[in-house]
Image (tube, rainbow, N blue to C red):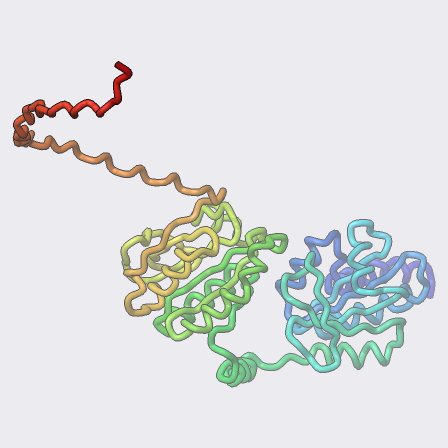
Amino acid sequence: MNYRSMVYLAPLALLLSVSVKANVEEMADVGHLRDIIRNNENVVIKMYADWCGHCKHAAIPFKELATEHKENVKAVAINHDNDDLKSIVKKFGVNGFPTFIFIKKEKVDGYEQITIKELSSSPLYIKKMVGFSHEDLKTRMKEFGTKVKKAARKAVHAVKSAFEKPFALNHAEDMEELKEDLATAFKNNKHFVIKVETEWCGACKAIAPEFKEMMEKHHKALKGAILDGENKEFTALLGKKLKVQAYPTFIFIRQDKAPGYEEIDLTELHEKPLYVKTIRGFSEMFKRDLAVLAGVPGAASITVTRITEKDEKAPAKAKPAKKHVEKKAVAKKAATKKPAKKYVKKHVEPKAEPEVCSQD
């Protein structure tokens, strides 16, 4: 090939290179990767290093396969030398390059369950392929990219839901998911309960089993969801509109007006205004109000004493002062004095002097 041909073909090669490269997105930082995983059903990551010859050899085949399966698979790349992503590479257990990580958000046979909080609040399911073999990578990508049709997936989900416990609490990850949960609740004539928690909140973890038990008990009337208070997806909703300032906080949502509920326009979740009640902390008052929301007979009449955060003892109630009642003076009967006994001196006859013999 002469020099002139190379000049003409160079732009075409560059164009092809760019079009292929567009299907393998380079990850900049942890937030970038988290968004990719959140918004895609199937994600495959190529872990590589600049100094790795095998990585360079695998670059073009990986781009070609990413292009072939772009409708069902999101292909990305992570450079091991990127300081912002080194900790994530370590958590995936990558010890050699190239390593291909296949990630799904639902449990699949043959995939390992892993939890990486920086990427997802829910577990991820991964399969690793260490090293590069064109045929193996081709087979893996084909299997990984096989996507069940939406109609079939919905049918499977419906069957699965029929066997699942109806009180299952969903950990919503974005507004769309929360909106869908709320719509499902209203469609089944149920009220909606949101538990707002955080990963570091000890109280949230301590009450989790009892809260789940209560939701199970009232599942016919209530549907629940759990939100991470630090998830940026919910910042505006929780902070500005619902004014959540502590954890755990419970949000009761209903379609109809009720005493103690505030009418709020939550267009992010529902086209019509909703009636909302916010309860801070897991207390006897919360349990009472949850029972009232679930329609438990007589629950509204239960009296609950609010406990302060400092758990201070309430001051003892002062006893009411005794009323002074004036008693009518009762005249005492004058004691009748007995007449003094007159002293009568009795006359005593002197005894006769004893007879004495006189000396005369």
